[in-house]
Length: 97
Image (cartoon, rainbow, N blue to C red):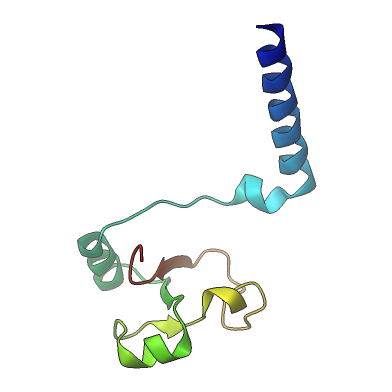
């Protein structure tokens, strides 16, 4: 029992250090939304950006009109992401493969 308590305390400490060391994780929130919810947001809200994270070839074959392409492996370094932090970002792909 004591061993489990030590492991639990260690995990909490690592989590706390990660939050302090990387404030982006602390401030970042996300939620899963359905296709109908996405459609409603795009129709009703300003400041929503739809991002397809598949490869450029997959984007060219099929994508949601109005979305932009930022392949997942280029996401961190993309200049296409808005600097305005008030813009909601919706990332999508083809689902689990």
